[in-house]
Length: 301
Picture 1 (cartoon, rainbow, N blue to C red):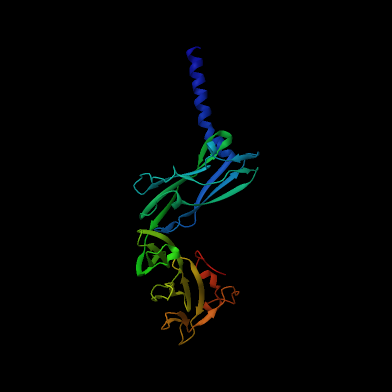
Picture 2: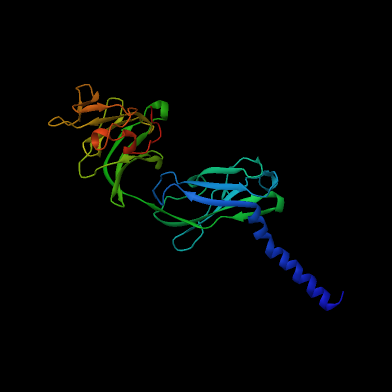
């Protein structure tokens, strides 16, 4: 083969390879979004990967060799790669994608990466496109991992049904963008690890929450979630919310936690609000109770 023809062949090969990513993206759209831009340390870092088939034909969305079709690359604030647990792959089942179909895949990044350090992170999802046997990358997305101030904590003995040993409740306040939240963190002191962390809801922090534990070592928290509105949460020793109630604060009779001689805890005072009742108008008396906070794990109702 003459030299000009050889150079022409090499040029065409590189041109085709350069066009492959654009061709793949023209057939499959992929994007990454986070539920929030800031997460509490040890809190589930939830994201969504959206995949849309715009190729005009059906194909099986699956990874090479039967592996997951979804993986991630993460870097921290100084640009260093965050080492994944399982090569950065997130478990995602194979499925048929019909023309025009859109798939939203929920992801908890902590299950694939250690995100227990404060700081800024940059994430990129990679979706395998079987027809072209290559990965497509989403645009970079930034998020932050932070921690708040522990304002109450107590160590207790866990029941034998949960393995015994000692555990610790921690209540954490965190403020951002002029909004404050209360977080629960449950630690296993015997194993020195965090069992769960999640938000109890928005709170008016300048009003000190009332906190105690009962005879079963359940945690009781009563905090102001909005003006003239209080939230009472009862949490079990494994970190599940057993009950959640909302109370209005009438004049001269605000709700408060009271404890009997046998360590039974209840709310005294205030006026109980039905969380399923429709809003009746503006202001505290007509505010939909569900808007006070996101529903944490274990919500009943």
